[in-house]
Length: 88
Image (tube, rainbow, N blue to C red; front, side, top):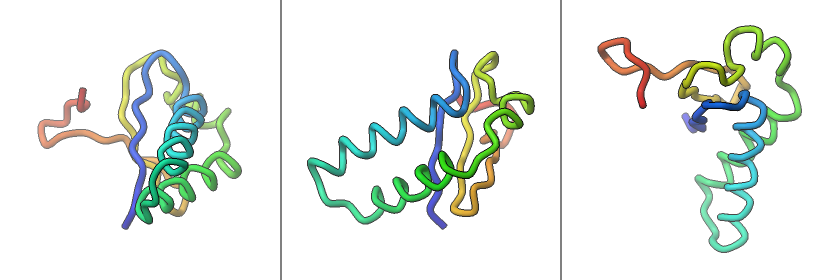
């Protein structure tokens, strides 16, 4: 299953998703990559359908550094390592 990781630090999840979108578009202008195209689809769908107000209230507001994974169905999961510490 393809997913997209976002680093949330000093900005909310919506801003992180927009930055990732711009990064992927810039990459795909230069190179053809089916996996990156799938990631772009995931981010675009997420930007269109996510309830960002709710996500910010759930702690994805950038006040604490987090890495999250966005899945094809639009779900969000915080990434933690096996010691339950946030990945830096």
